[in-house]
Length: 215
Image (tube, rainbow, N blue to C red):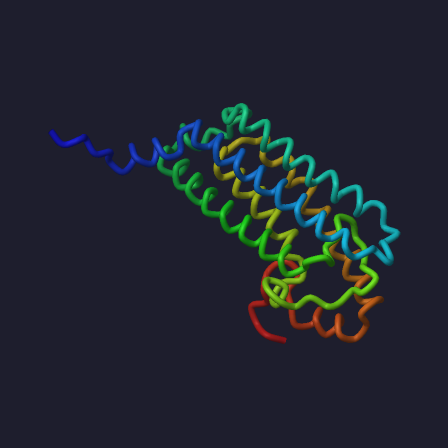
């Protein structure tokens, strides 16, 4: 006898079971924490020269990251926390959103690590510049000025698609306005330090997504 083959919907349901969702969320958080810790250790090799006086952006940075990790861990413990109800209303739509969420998480992690790799020792947790700060325009920074912020928002949207829980909206409520504030503070600081080269970089790149048309 040949083993029974799962049909399309059954296969999707098995792939996106609660246990599979839990494993994906734990793996994503572990990758983010491990990656951030590694790059933090590397960044210590180059001292900070000047930090932004905008303390609000610093608080938001820590709060947004902490909330995201906390909510994802809570959802990993209980994927059924505060369900939106899309899967019960439309199983096909629920499965499609879960698949899109899984793909989005992979893209977000790829963008996160490629942006960190491009920054190297110039990365800082808070809005600041290093003693020998240079313009970084390689990797994702060739087209986007704040790919790390983009990766976090994409990860948060992807988690929302995977778990389809109202709880997943909480980090977004803080990160989107928070990253906008941080991006402005960062750009002011870098324009002051790097001068015309950074202002030209501002002109030819998008803040969070690539420009649709060249300047």
